[in-house]
Length: 51
Image (tube, rainbow, N blue to C red; front, side):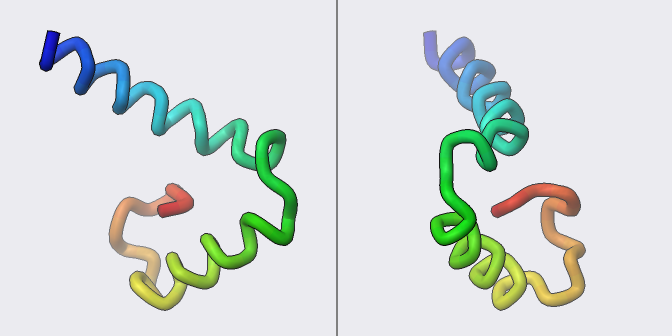
């Protein structure tokens, strides 16, 4: 069960990225982008991901 949960969680995270703009407003996404830029200014950590 633990392994299955991990697998599902990983797939969920990948799917959420695509659906983020449908489930969150631009005002809610902006702080996420700001945080990502502050923590990873060169974009080398988890490239292409929101967080």
